[in-house]
Length: 218
Image (cartoon, rainbow, N blue to C red; front, top):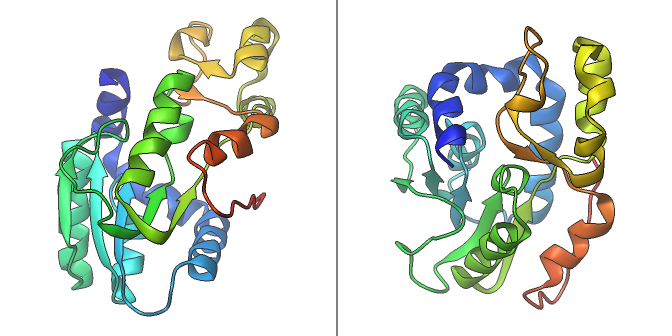
């Protein structure tokens, strides 16, 4: 996970600004969050929070949001932005999705996994992340998770840098991406990632016997 931590340490401000550049992504994600998160204030754990764009937006609505992220610089940035926005965050904790050992069972009404599941490259780690999120979730609570589909990097490459596409059949077959797969001189674009096939998403989320699961394709 060191590679991922370093990537976000180096790109903290850019990651914050990314959702200004991609306003539709932010607006659609917030719409989905508002569709599922209760209107009354609840305790939310934002796992893989990054610099806190969604956490701060939810805190504006009165929710008590705790952030967890690998990147200390991202958490520090989130604290600064929260102060500027004059909102209070419930906490900022350095950690990762695979081990939420700093939190008691059944603590949160909502858990957000809006990043970890497209960075954890082994199925074992992805399953453990879902298991840990379920553990800290209150009975009747909600987990909201996001994935990036298997074809997304090819769409990006076709638009931005087609030079590396022909050599990456492996990415299409496995979903596993590392920057070493990008030809020398081409735009690295991203850090270690896992791009999911649609058929695996629901079984992954249903492993912990959730009463209900639903897929929204954005």
